[in-house]
Image 1 (cartoon, rainbow over the protein chains, first blue to last red):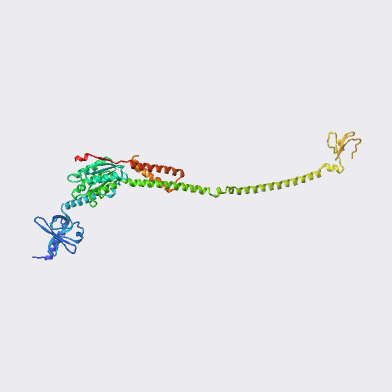
Image 2 (image 1 turned 135 degrees about the vertical axis):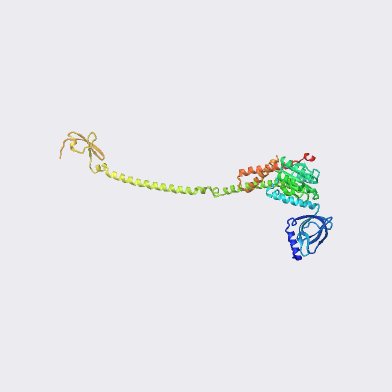
Length: 398
Length: 64
């Protein structure tokens, strides 16, 4: 025999339990009993069914996120791991989350579907289509008799009268309701509207459940038209909300998100008109300013200044030209007078005046030799003041 | 005015207002822009005033 200690067996059992992957993530349904919230914040209780009971503990950090106060006799589903408490040699559930049963089971289904679709990329924010700013046609998939439709129609017709609205009557609760929602989505996918709103008013988690169906999420994902999902109240989140291109907290909010406000548009148009007027006035003013600025420039104020300098230059050039010309003229005159004087000095008349005369024959040829004449020739003796006609009587050579 | 052009015209108006406010516009252009802008504001306002919501409830979905 080789006996082991109590501690050893308890440690072995704990290690054995902790190593089991099934026991490390359990969803367990049962009824709460002996519920005690310790002053430390930890909760101690048991879960039981008709024939069995198991101890459970929920530590403070998990208990803090409880959305309800557990009570004895309450049917719940817990998410827990099973382990043992070595000191006492007992095994128990270590609870992470607790949900009331009924809703709780749906909650688990919801979380599991959400995780799966998320992994698949159905909720990918990058795939979200923008909601058109000015939709011409809006498709609505909801109950034709619900308050949600009334709210949506009220708001859209008041806010943005130009919009055309097409309602696809769908069931929004109960067995098979999700199929009508899926049909509505594919109808609008084929019948070109600009925006689709799907949704319903508030209700119990079970009432809203059809908006958590996988087929609805996939139909939204497939829909080529931007989808706004508005299910229940602000606090209700559905798979449909996550899959949609835009989640609206309520149907009324969906209507507001789907269309612009005509009133605001009119205000904007009014503002635009004022801005246009201000714009044209400031534009005209600006153009006038630059015109006035040009007109007031020196050139236009004193146009003579532009030519003044040139006029002066011209005058001085003229002066120069005239004086130059005059100088030249007087120089010529002097030269001319000098020439005249020399000419005068050289004049044969002057020589004649000194007592000389020149001889011409009858043909008015100058006779400069005795050999050119003969006896009885008629010669003309020219003096400075007249001539004498003579007859040659005798010739004498030298 | 068709609603299809509403958004386009609204954008056009916005552009015109911005250009005119920018100030770098020729005199002749600025007057043209102003006229076009005023025309757009009135046609857009008219479109909003005259539009009447049309609501159709389909019957197909009901039998499901």
